[in-house]
Length: 94
Length: 98
Image (tube, rainbow over all chains, first blue to last red; front, side, top):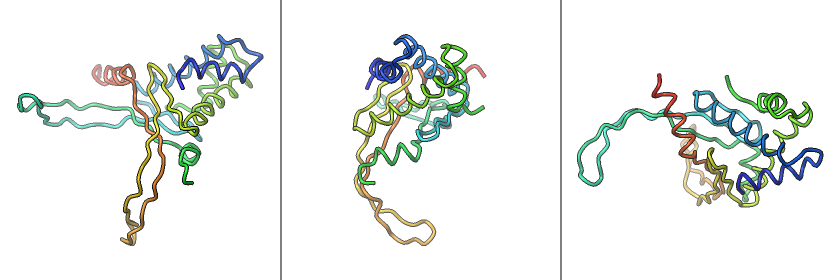
């Protein structure tokens, strides 16, 4: 499913709204989620999951081509943990 | 502060002009569509944000950490999230500027 397919599905669910409203809603939700994560804040969506940042400490890496050591700086990477409902619905064995 | 569904609904009320009821329902529907797609085995690709994908995990041996007893972890299907390059670089920019 892509963003435009999601917009169309939402537009169908809300026949009283115009497609533009669904489009703006999807954009507003994703922008807010992006901005929040980008400033180091968590996102917690009950029934779906939570997003947070994981810290990766600086480490000594190697250039795989030359074998020379390079300092890899510390960084923060986005992390998603699926919530209970999502986990249950996706897992076919449950 | 942690972003929640209530915060997102407030944003749709303020920025998009949905009424309070519609804003709350829209946020709920947004995440329900993602769940439904993933439940159907469909991956979700939200350009600029990231992709949600499904992975099939085989059964593997596990242990009860309390008792040390061996118990198999059953095969299962799980959701993984991969942040887009845009989201990753926005996060990096923020910490680089500190």
